[in-house]
Amino acid sequence: MAAGAGMSGVVDLAGPSASTKTAEVRPQRVTVLGATGSIGASTLDLISRSGGAFEVFAVTANANVEGLAACARASGAKRAVIGEEALYAALRDALEGSGIEAAAGEGALIEAASVPVDCTIAAIVGAAGLRPALAAVRTGRRLGLANKECLVSAGDIFMNEVESSGCELIPVDSEHSAAFQVLRGTQPEAIEKIILTASGGPFRDWPLERIVNATREDALKHPNWSMGAKITVDSATMMNKGLELIEALHLFPVTTDQLGMLVHRQSIVHCLVSFVDGSVLSQMAEPDMRTPIALALSWPRRMPAPTKRLDLTQISQLSFEPADEIRFPAIRIARAAMERGGSAPAVLNAANEIAVSAFLDGRLRVPDIASMVEETLGRADKGGLLGEADSLEGILGCDSEARRLCEELVSRKG
Ligand code: NDP
Image (tube, rainbow, N blue to C red; front, side, top):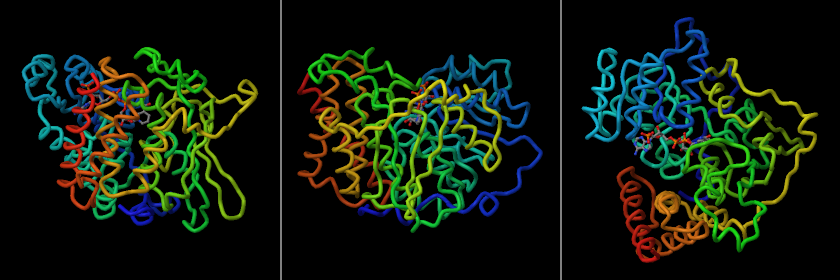
């Protein structure tokens, strides 16, 4: 992908009446991919409070049989799918007597995602969510996309499929949900800059020498958000913001130099968009993912979400500062991969997934995450891996080779 390739495949910026059908009275059918995770639980919580406005078709997980069976039963889902094929019998037993259909394996995940529903929430973590999310896109219905790694790895391919299928893509990542709302009805040429905000994570004020010895528990202590482990570590290294820049490039009609970020400690302003006339618009909300998920479920309407209401007199101060790229080298590395384009973002993402998992297993320290990713990108470049990203098979090939390279580096380090 060349710099600026995000100009072609973008979410529809027309106003709500131009892009959506009138809401029907019947319950909206929803599939939740990654139902046992943090976004999955927030989605099911909203659905359970919706007074029957939604009904669940399928819920999926990777290995958490108990959690999946519990949320399938509680939500009245028709189908529950576990990614690990070997866990089929355990899931079937856990669902016994419920009438809920059990299935297992990657093929079953894709098959469940291929069944047309009104809205699919894509909340699997990592590039593992790419094929199921693409299957949901191909149904041509609505996709609430939380799984940012899909767009980082295969953004051009993904957005081409969105365009050709007529899928209505609503971003769930809070910054992109904010930009999506702010940009409604905007002419692309009126946009000057999209600025994503970042809390700065738990290490924003730590002396650099202390970060070297940060533990898993330190990294998982996010100051503002409660999220799954992988994205929480990504927030601690600020790789998350790098991934989000690439996500924004694909979602919105901007070039790489129109994307910026600011550290905003309070996580109240989720994104700022500046326009050619000097206006800056933003969206604000308390940091609770149920707000952007509710938007994805109910757009162009708004459904009630039981979140804490914003009281600016209590918060009293909103602060903004530049991101520190010395403290957080992942930002520079991700930006370089975004500007390089092609398969570089897929390699960045795959290496980061391996490095984060090694950190969570106690095999790496926090600063090693960014250096492993950078080294993997360097080796991939030398090995001629950073080429075009024009086929899904090509991208998946780069992804697995980058994982292998990074694993090798991690083992050597260990
Ligand atoms: P969690 O780790 O909490 O949940 C991940 C979900 O994906 C679980 O249901 C898990 O199943 C499933 N899963 C994991 N690996 C696989 C696999 N190989 N195949 C199939 N399913 C799998 O993640 P989050 O909910 O925090 O994040 C989900 C996505 O949303 C990520 O891409 C993240 O970046 C994005 N996001 C999350 C936010 C948040 O607040 N949490 C905010 C913005 C974006 P199991 O339980 O069995 O492991």
